Length: 247
Image (cartoon, rainbow, N blue to C red; front, side, top):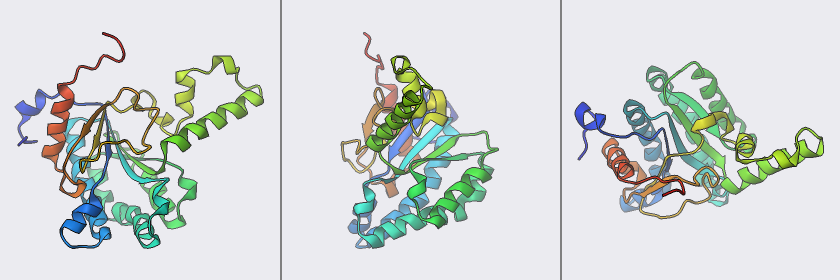
């Protein structure tokens, strides 16, 4: 197993600037233990802190976590309500640690659709950490890749209609700027995507941004995913030859 305290070992790692994680397997983790699904979500929330600190210590610039998708609203209302309370509990509990670790919070998603208490917790966290200069902890909350692309297209269409831009001048860069990840600038595209629990799909996550991301599908359920797992997955990333379409 990898050891985060082994500085020699970690110094050999080529750490991705932006890691995105689909935190999957909370429900199955709970079922395996004979507990309700919400117990898995609660433990998954606790693990966010551990992995965020580990990623920050490794030198990751952006850690994007897929916390709640636009499709998750179709889940049972009891589960959805619990998930909406998680940001309130998370930031209420872990804010001192985030500030201590110099981690800055960002949220990518359609936050206007969130319940008032959830939205307040999110915006308070962004405000309380805006002076931090370390890793950006980016929560994809009420996020969907297709909806994001449509949203960006609408913005550009309105600008073109109002003669603010020439449609002929729209390119990859100008389109990327209109995406919800636009504030991340050059760090918007993940170098590495990790999905836990063994599922092998991207589930409408950062469809535009992951055009050239390396993907690792880890068998570990998210609540059991450790800093050692993170390092091992980065090692897999290190073994990849990223050619970006060239030879």
